[in-house]
Image (tube, rainbow, N blue to C red):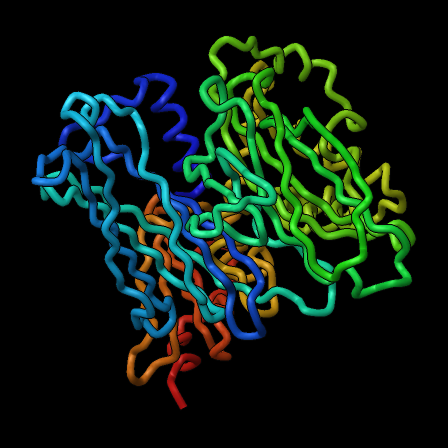
Length: 461
């Protein structure tokens, strides 16, 4: 589920205290990608199925609940299924009342080797004892390459429990001498006050001239404020290591947060980072962010720790919302502090409701960028630098997408329809190179590239 979906799910929990219908199953999943080799990513899917939403049945051996989890992974370009597997998930109880009032979740993990590329991930959970109880989830995913030469960080895995130096080697959650019990909901709070995380750091010895290496850990709230930060030196005895940690979030108010891990190199002043959003439900903690936001400044905001490269990358993503004067103004800035201040004010000026602690414009842009990087990243470009990414960032989700991934006489192409813009406009993208980098070929939107003869460019050779 993407970040927007998870946030809606969080609100549903707060408002309705998770009132789920009888024909549905409370089911959630998450995933993380880890380096494997030069052609594949090690892909882990974490799932959680509510036991109390499953029908208990008595057998000769015990009383139990059981579900069937089906996982389908389809290549986005060729439309071929790489994976279509079913898994039985079950547990047993002593009595029916124990089964009906368990309040627990069936938590598990499935792992695959996934060749680099873009895929559709589909998951279906069905009660084995009541076929009417079923839940479907889907998401577009990318299996991306990890460098074997430059320092980098894997995805973050959030966990409800981590046991270091674990002896439970038979556990499905055991890896690198550690047992990591995932939290697929990515929700923490009063019932789960400690956020555990797991990440892998690669190629620490790739540049021995860069001096000491440090890992910086930050938690940022929805306002972009740092609510936690810690920096530790990283041992460079091994080229790749595991980083695990625990954060006490019991004092943070309900809301959306982001954990960011960054590797920082002392001499070069460069770094790489990996981040992930999580959610907190702490109804007993007062939210003071509105008072804090009134005194928010560049120094105390997330912009205050950005490098010049970070500033340039962010402005490269959001410049489409700026005027030509603002673009010229940013390009003329010659200091890091000036760029930080510019970006701080850029977002403040576009806050649609300054009376609220959240900057809704900034949140929407961040959510779109998260989606873009997950969907439209190519082998040579980040998502926001692709044509589809740019259009999605500016105009949002299309009302309709017409996809042609494998017409016999045409190169892959897509037509996006926006019915509420200028009375209805289209954008046509084509994969002319065969590397999943869809170029904008034609649009009826004023100010965009127009080529009414675009079809000649997608004729297969």
